[in-house]
Amino acid sequence: MLDVLDVMTRLGEVKNKTAEARRATEADTAASVVTVAVIREFDSKADKANRQPEPNGSARDSVIELEQAGDSAKAAAEADPNLGQAALQAVQDAHLAICVLKTEV
Image (cartoon, rainbow, N blue to C red; front, top):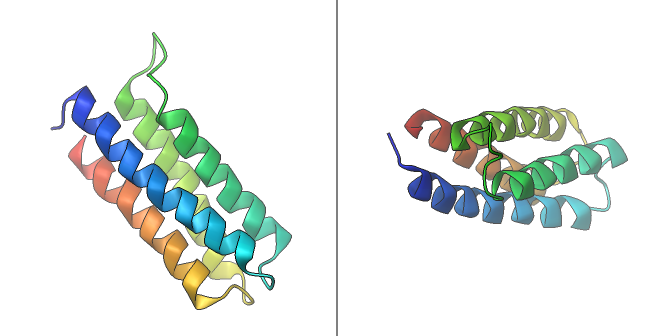
């Protein structure tokens, strides 16, 4: 089990992946507006998770919330028939990063 500092460090790494997924998806002119919106929400949740936990919250709660957003992002990306391979891979990489972190907290 990771301590809070390690979780926050790892959340920063996940944020890098979600930002890359957002950039790749936004740059893909064939991506649906729905897919782009869901990926943006995933990245926004990563921003939120990287802030200090709320007084009544925990780093684990942040990881769980971010994983749920990642699940939605992955589903949207995989369902978008026009999304390019680079954007799809970036979303899958970001999703995997948060899933791995969840197993460690």
